[in-house]
Length: 337
Ligand code: ADE
Ligand code: ZN
Image (cartoon, rainbow, N blue to C red):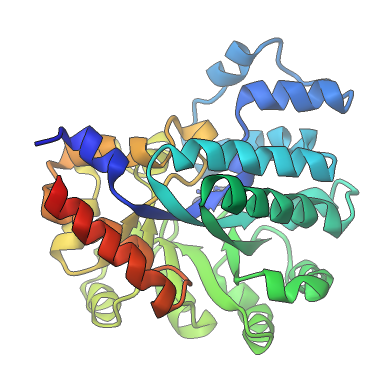
């Protein structure tokens, strides 16, 4: 019998909650700063890492937006994506649905095309060289207004066929999903899938709004849904996928201890939970590390791990025909290991 860590690394899995800007490692940050002649407010890679101590989501976002300022060219975004895909391929990840935040870059003066063209070329390279497939999700920054989100959706029009979905991220408290009801309606009319961060720091009401006002296909995080039994019934009954991010929750003080993380409770309540890394360069672990640490803290059994792996594909935006071979690979792997 393989150890749990070995079993997890080899288990075919997908990642459904990954902000590509959150995979910017301090080493690459320094390299891009040098390449683009940008002065960082840090003396060294170690000083950057030392600054990664957060007491809430906003603490993190402030430093995360600052870090993204070194991304200037298509090549930068391409290199960022390829570096992430190399790491996650080694974690047994076969498919990724990644977020990017165009407004973080257009607000710095970059044309809309720079980030998306660089990311799409990195995604193509990952498929060719690593066999990892991916889909791109455009996130609106919820601390900005509805007009800014509409302008971003309009800028994305030439790229519609290369986008899978829109999402909603950034500062949750004070920015309920309903603020973006009309933008989501317009995105749906364009044939895009819909996801939204909800219930990370925000109350259960924000999860209800994401479901009933935005009509999302997936909830990102969803931790605080557990405070409302009717919401749990709704989520379980509709097999709504939750993209849960355990190490992120620990680093942003959404939970105090991984042993207190709600993931096992979610599975036991019949919720369709998945494990994801969110912003791995900032939170201390890529996909497999999230799985390994969570499995150890919550005593997850092999049955739970197989369920989580299956959820990561059935909760994806792949077609049933694309999902089927991944599920067969999981089953074959579980029998052989
Ligand atoms: N942007 C990047 N990571 C995020 C998170 N965990 N919550 C909200 N916005 C984010
Ligand atoms: Zn996130």
